[in-house]
Image (cartoon, rainbow, N blue to C red; front, side):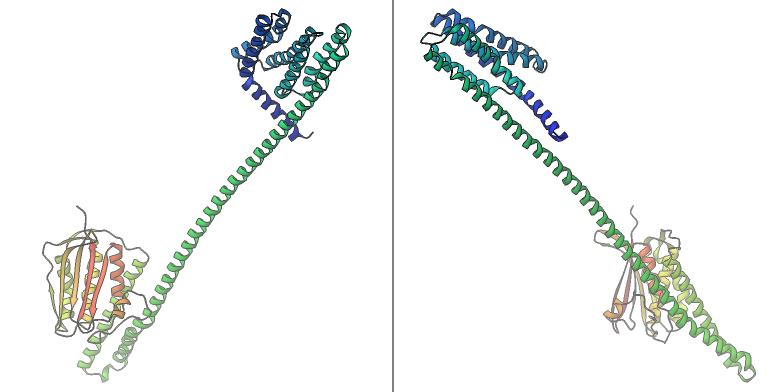
Length: 471
C-alpha cells in the first residue's frame, strides 16, 4: 500500500470517527427508548420477567455510553467505541437468550425474526474494521451455538427455524463489509477529487500570478516602448535643431561674414581708389552686417540655452506698459527708417507675472518682426488686457500690424523647425527665422499660449497669453 493509500485510509478512519461521534447521541437515545419499550412490554404486558431481564445488559451499556458522551462529547473516543462494540455484542446475546427462553414455545419464531432484524440493523450501523465486525458477530453466535446444542437440545422443527440465523449472520457480515468498502471508495473518490481540486486551484492561482507577471511585463514593455518613442522624438527634435543650427551657420552667417570680408578687402587693398563718400557707404554696410551678425549670434545663443533648459526662469510681477515702452525705445529708430507708426495702447495699470527678461525678448522679437513685414508708412499697435479662457485667467499682449500678412499654410508652419525659414521683409530685410521660435519657447516655459491671426495683404495679429498670478 503506497503512502497516498495509507494517508487516505487514515483520513477515512478519522472520518468514520467524526461520523460516529456526530450521530452517537441520536443512536443511543433511540436505542435506549426502544429497549425500554420492549422491557416494559415484556415485564408488564407479557409478564415475562426473564425476557425483560435480558434487556438490562445492553440497556445499561447504552445508557452508560450516552452519559459519558453527553459529559465529554469530544473526548474518550476509544472508551466510547469499546462500549458501543460491547452494546452490539450485548444486543445479539440478548436476542440469542430470548431464543433460548422461547425454545419449545410458540414465541420462538418471532424471537428468531427479531434476532434477524437486529443482525441487519447492526450490519447497516456498524462502521468498524473487519476484525472487530467479525468479533461482534462471531462471539454471540458461538456462545449461542454451544448453549443451544449442549443444553437446549432443539427439536428438528425448532432446529430448522433457528438455523436460518447462521446464513443471515454471514449475509449481514458480507453486507456490512460491502457497505464499508463502498463507503471507503466513495470517501477515496471524494478525497482524490478534493486533491485534484486543490491542485487545480493551485495551478489556477499560479496561472493568475503568471498572468499578473506577464501583465506587469507587458505594461513595462509599453512604458519602455513609450520611453523609446519619446526619446526618438527628442532625438528627432535634437537632429532637427542640429540641422537648423548648421543651416543657419551655413546660410545666415556665411552671407554677412562673406560681405564683411569682401568689403574689408576693398577698403584694405583699394582704399586709394575709393572716394570718401563711397568709403562711408562701405563702412556703413560693414557696420550693419556686423550688427545683423551680432543679433543673429545673440538669438542663436538664447535659443540654444532655451533648448538645453539652461536659461533661469524667475517669474515676478511687472507693469506691461512700462516693459513695452522700454523695448520700443530701441525699436523706434528701426520703425522710423520705414516711416512706421507704433502705438502702445496697453492700460497703464495692467500687471503681469512673468520672467521679465524673457518677456522683454518676446516683445522685442514680436515688434521687430512686425516692423520687418509692415510696409513703409504702416501701422503697428500693441495692446494688453486680462482675459478668461476655459476658466483660466490670462494676461494677453497683442501685436497687430497691417503688413503683408500670411496664408493659413504659412501660419501653420510658423513654429515648425525647418532648415531655411527666413523670409525677406518688405524692404528686403534679412532674418533668421529664430525670433518666433524663441518667443514660442519662452511662452511655453510660462505655460502660456501664442495665437496667430493673419490674412494675406491684411496684416497679422500675434496674441501672447500668460497665466495670471492667483491672489
